[in-house]
Image (cartoon, rainbow, N blue to C red; front, side, top):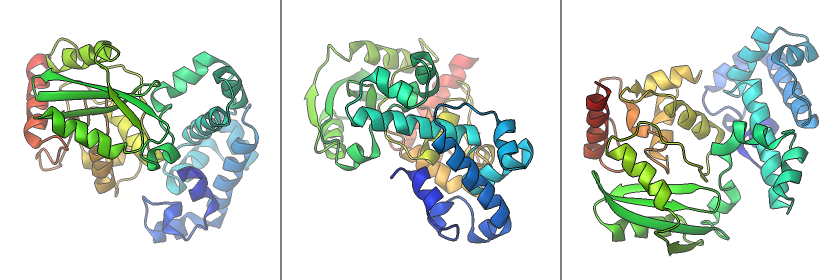
Length: 305
């Protein structure tokens, strides 16, 4: 069961139902507010082909659009539209997992067209949590390594897109970490297949380009996904604090959770977690070394000017 589904099915008093707020906050939400959210989620789940507006959903539960949006943010930490997008993507993945063709799966999930699917979900069509938990069992991962301004760069991808980007000092260490992460996957080196994507990343590191737009195949919880999406909106050469990111996500007490989501990012540079810093001006942690984080930020600021 995916995370949002689990949280909607558990009793309200369980911390897992709403991990970003205290239990007292849930009590303050009230049974009526909680029931409205449940009814809207049920409606969205039962009508995958529908594309109701916020106003239509609010009318369905006899409240205003403003109050419905506020209730969703309070109970689940996301908007009704984000919930609908998440459930549609979940249905699409389920259909694919059951052997349906891409075309059949996207219509069964309620996308209506392939353009709508890729507009909403290109960066989210990642490895399923079940596959990830099994160490990538059944996945075929290709990788390559190369020199870059920050040492050595490893890029790995499945047939769907990039699943790992790593920075380090030695190829052997980077490859060993990839094999440890995806211990059940079929992993092989393939320089030619990944050359174009490597060139995009090198162009970014060398200051020849400011944007990275690559297909991704990554596993994320709903909260991680929101954090990573926010990271991708931070302009080149700028930063946001973990606390500010938490406030923008509507979960002001979740600064530490934001930090953990940044640290768990498997595709740095593509998702620029180096642009998240501490409130006191410190760089905070960085999985690939604080020195590399500092170098990335300094390089961006110089080129921005």
